[in-house]
Image 1 (tube, rainbow over the protein chains, first blue to last red):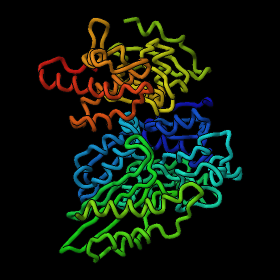
Image 2: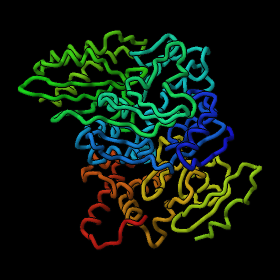
Image 3: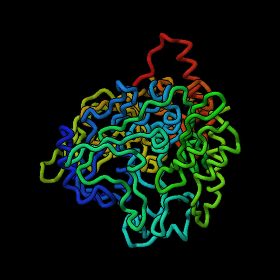
Image 4: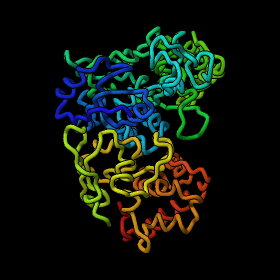
Length: 332
Length: 181
């Protein structure tokens, strides 16, 4: 591991000022915020991340979880994934979020990993994680061996001819379905970024994954109050029953009235360059009676434009069935 | 127990980039002077000579390095020691001793819950923590909550049995000593 300075930030302003000195907030960052470290320390050992300075943000009091006056849920950036998943407010109002977090990683990792760290975790693409390999995300312009290589786990949506990496998060999929907004404090002030706009598609610059710039500190996220009576579920399909990344996953939420769908929202994991949500696919469900055909139509719409690779064509059909099955679970 | 402070490496000065960190390990205050790259796992093993905690994958995938920080289990291989100023850390050495085993250690022995033993300290640290977590009493849930601890010998069935035995012991004897750490 390359040598680095470890600095404990005294407050958010100091952390932001120190972070602003980084050459980038994306791949190649010279300054990184240290929260749980479960992704960062792992990638530093591999030589994928090579920061010169780490800013420890664990003692800034950013770990709160509480309901706000307007009924929305405040989740601090350094709240631990375990605390979020088991929180009574989350279990009651955002079941798919609790289930998504508990479907990811192990208890030890969830006890350490944080909200912001989970949102910012990096792809598990084996070529990205191996500095001996070419990788456009790690080293733009070096090539993408995954496209003609081992791509079974990789993405079918939002990819480019430069990168087919999958966003690996379960938590972010549920948060996307719940219309979560990311609150960022940076060198130029405070911004509220809908999670739908937080990740950028790879295009020709897969090293750029988010809209964050140097100094940007995610302070918390806000989940709007769910519609009354909403039911939700997170369905994760994977090669092993536990402690495995998704082949395909779906966070789905629905509200019914008089036998008709009043509201529907869903997002997919394991298939996209970023957590994947398609507004048109959801709107097609509004006013429909819950049925396999209605869900299948929404699934077809969501997967439109899917571009399978040589070893992951199965994900297209698996994703559709995952959506149908998730909605059947919460409408039966 | 050995004097942890005396076993610490020679304190350096600011020029060599070392950081001075204080935390409590198994109830004893200790102070170390370490390179910021040193993980909690390496600090425990190489600096404090507490070698009961094992290094398996060193990437948070196998669970052999599981210790308790602030009463919760974590992968010590992914934790930077210098980020744990003031924390309360418990390792397998802090759970029990020969002749005075923690109930989970005794249950692992009784149920033959290991073969080579390399993963065992991590398994026991996880199993002890699990009984304080919102884990239902079903074997399925115990397996799910233990999935972060890999056993290449495949002692899983007996690990579940040992864990469930201690759960029942705790339930049957609510006045028993709390499960350590």
